[in-house]
Image 1 (cartoon, helix red, strand yellow):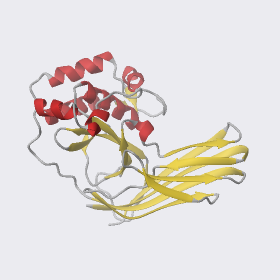
Image 2 (cartoon, rainbow, N blue to C red; image 1 turned 120 degrees about the vertical axis):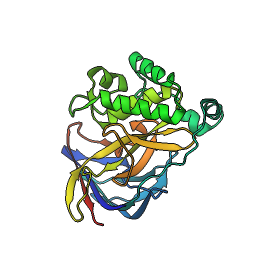
Image 3 (cartoon, rainbow, N blue to C red; image 1 turned 60 degrees about the vertical axis):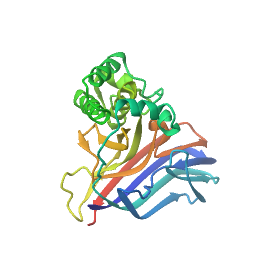
Image 4 (tube, rainbow, N blue to C red; image 1 turned 90 degrees about the vertical axis):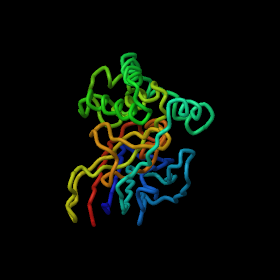
Length: 281
């Protein structure tokens, strides 16, 4: 078990006054059976009134608006989370049971359809179908697909952008965690396995040192349904454990961006993002 403090700061600097901006932040974790949020705050500069709600996918959202002229905007979320090792129940469903449930349960139906960002390339579909034909159960099939996709990709920053699709990244065989997660989602769904995009954080050290602050990043991984939801990090080829902190989940990245908004003002702006993670216990 790790107790992690996460400080995530996003700053915009504009070349002229912005008269108003309207934003949604998805930067604060929620408690679940695998993590306990001990504290979580969101600071906005210039100061703004905040409204918290839970969106359709179960993600904690803070909406805020700045309606005074400003040339900069800084949003900083600080959370203290107790992350616990995950455990998954046994006795996965058989393929016939899974197909029956995905035909009738709305949550599963919503996570079985492809999106613009997850639509897989033809060879990814063939890859998923070949693995699904090996006689494995749905849980084993999903794990094999996720690991195969992760092993096929090289983690490289700057090759893709926030709007890149799974097909774009697969063509290059390079990308970041968002791309690798989108490709994995497309492959899992092509095999008939409901899967969702998970947004959060990962402590980069396998053995985090208490009291040491390290540079981190927003991270993404997958969860698939095979009788229960199972998480896997295809970028790092590891199970979800007590170094991962979950913020939200959805069909793809567009459902859980850390910060999203609109503003009235100059088009040009400079963006800086920093994530600091500290194991405190």
